[in-house]
Length: 224
Image (tube, rainbow, N blue to C red):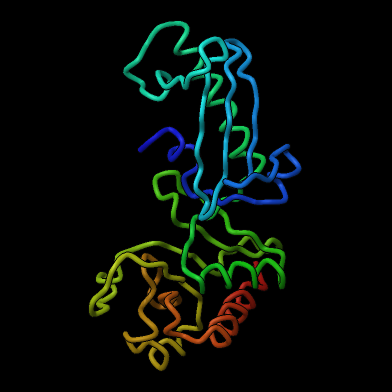
């Protein structure tokens, strides 16, 4: 993975933030030009279509591209200084101009926006070793009411399963048997299967039904 890919992994450009940062519109996309402080090399960053990020570092003395900083195998005080300044610029842009986008499924993104607008709750990413997993909790009781996980749905018994995004939700134990059908609704993955069930966020459950079940799960956490 290239240095650019590492820094911008799971990031998506926010155009208004890019403009505020100093990016300008060009034929190839939004462009930002800066001077690296130690080397005085000119660095150009372009954010093109489909979040494509390209960079160019130019030696102003020779007016030619400089590329030694792109490989960690190239060492020495000067090249390491260029690499440090190059990374600093990119990390600043990633922090100030890009939004984190861990989850990719359209239904997952739609659900995240619904919860944010209705309740003001934000996903919490608790596990460093599982960066693609997150939880929602009620701020008043601190109890979880949903988890969103990325997993191989073969493990749920899904025919032709693949890596996908799922949600675990709470339910009253007495209602579990009537709900779980191992088609749309599955026993809770990595959760207490008496109190939690799982939905694959692939559209198999209509969004209107999904948000109703999220609401019900959240409302089960009214008491501490």
